[in-house]
Figure 1 (tube, rainbow, N blue to C red):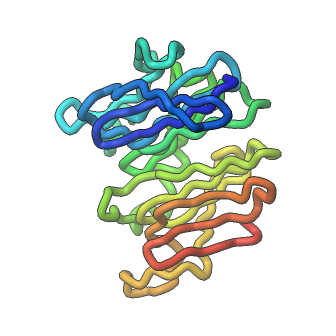
Figure 2 (figure 1 turned 90 degrees about the vertical axis):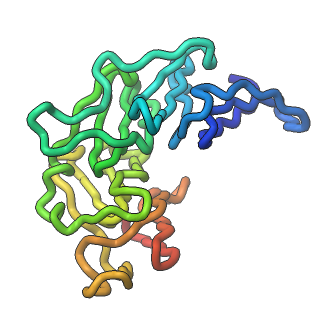
Length: 233
């Protein structure tokens, strides 16, 4: 992919904008999924470029859509993200797709509402729930924010595949250092002024979580109560 591509997910569908390195003129493809909310739109360039769109239709529900021909055709996964039939949860929206490092070809993560994390190891064709997060002991203290209760930020460590961090609204930040087997809330010092306990273990309304590109232990969090930085992850 020698050109510059800008992917836009909007309330009106998904768009692919293309330009050369000078970025003076742009060509636009789309909208794909016209009139539908696209919460996230990304491309995986580790192998054959594959586009992933988190499609959330108010009438037909949510789906993950994939394209390997720059949006000419789209397909759903063979086993899409979704809860087991006996689960107390049902999928409302797909919020985030995060692509793992090049040394983990085929690995992707999906964050959804209600707050849960799914993993694919075959390029998005099949997904499994990381149940240890869904069933975390603190879940009864999680609550929906204005947009719902969702995993909207997924931060992967570039050098250690076992380190996964997620931002949940409104539950806070959680970290796993064993590939998702166990999770620890890491919200010390983060205000939740809308709760009776102002600095709780969980319950903070994270809006966005991002790692420093060159210092992965440095995290930035845009929050209901301000902007925060952590130097120790």
